[in-house]
Image 1 (cartoon, rainbow, N blue to C red):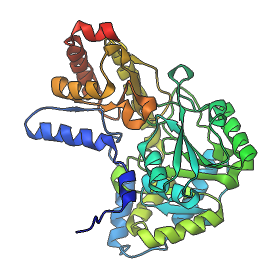
Image 2: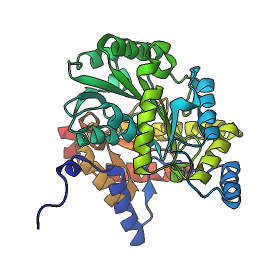
Image 3: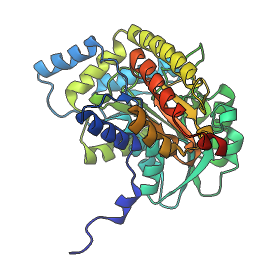
Length: 398
């Protein structure tokens, strides 16, 4: 029988977090109690008014197809929320509702990147960016985020990577896995590069509401001169604790959106109608839940960062956004992959190796603090005990 799998499929890579989760679940089936820091998923439940809106829609018969780009009321609600949050006006026709933020990433990259193009991607970064670029037989070009620069995407580093083949720059702030945020000067510098070199900006802002310590979310979408060359990706998953609902959106110039509508029409037709109704309730309904959630994340962040910095060989900067702590573990003398395996086996704590996010993450672990304070404290104790059992020679060679 001939080889039936297309070569392009080998260029797609799965997220390592789900492999670690699978291992952890297997241990749980064996009776072990596992503390989970590996998956970036809010432990909060979806607010009741959102769930009730979905139930109401189902009971009223919203179980049929909708227009591929989304129902008009939801596209309008998204456009209104963008104006309120970013100060930028989009018409509903410049918005497409997608079945998840990941789908939005796929649509955005597929719609603008050709075979042989180069796309600038931070490292470390969310694995899907690189995966989709390679799937298209394009070339990811990496810009390393430096710990001593607070893991910011610095325009001068980006410019050093630009060539005649560069098509787009991918931006993610607040950042997964580092929890960093970019500044206004960073945003302006990246916008200048896009204009100077005729580039597209793809900005993944899915954590934009999860920012701490009085800092403000900055996005290239707020700069009018680059609006037509910017693709804004967002999702309701993190902000409204709706990971299982699978709903996101893209805002971009109308020509691009029209092509994405055709793409979506061919792939999934539309986002489920009752989920779209619930999404309107999320965007138009009470927003106080978000403030309470962010405050709880801040408390957890402070606890986990303080605890991690008390563990031998660990060094962690305080993240300013998202819900991840990105910990330098090079002084333990173990590779990040080895330490993840060791902590799962010895401490029954599931973490994620930084190299899962590219070579820029080597020597780091990512901890999601989107879990209970009780689990955080217990996990820190277990990790501290496990690390203290490591032979002295490991620390000596680091």
